[in-house]
Image (cartoon, rainbow, N blue to C red; front, side, top):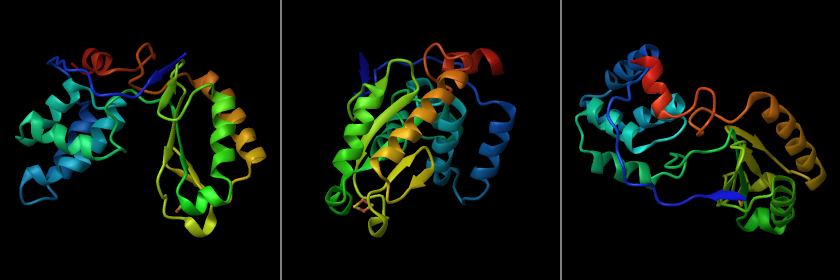
Length: 198
Ligand code: FES
C-alpha cells in the first residue's frame, strides 16, 4: 500500500522552531533583501531542509519569521512543486515524461520504477523511502530520457541502469531509514524538531 499525495491537512501547532544554525541562516537570507518578505522562497527552502516538509506548523513559523500571513506563505508554497506540502520519501524520483523523453523511452523508466518500488507516480512508499513522480521537462531534452533523484540529474537513462540504481538506493535506504520529517523516522517531523530545539 502507498501513501498518495494530496491536499495538505488543515491543522496547526505552535512552538516549532528552527535549530540555532538554521536560525542564523534565516537571518543571513533575510539580510540579502531590502524587505525581509523578499526572502520567502529561500526561507521556505531552508525550512524544508530543516523539517523535511512544510507542515502547517512550519508554514506558521516561516510566516512569523518574515512578518507575513500564513495564507501568503501557503499560496507561495502551493505554487512550487519542489516545495513539499506532504512528507516525502528519502529519495524523490522524478521521471520526465515530456515529448523528447517520452519518445526515447520515459514510459519504460516509469514502468521500471512502478515495478521496483510498488508505487504509482504521485505516491510515496509506505516505508518513507521513495516518492515517485512523472514530471514535465527537466530541461535536458537533448540528453533524453532524463530523470532526477533528489538534486542529482541522470541523462540518457537505460531501463536496466535505472533498475540497478533503484536497487542500490533501496539497499542504502534500508540502512539509513526514511528522511527527516517522515512520521516515525528517528529525527523526523516538525514535532520532533520542536522537542529537539526548544
Ligand atoms: S522533455 Fe524530458 S528533459 Fe525535456
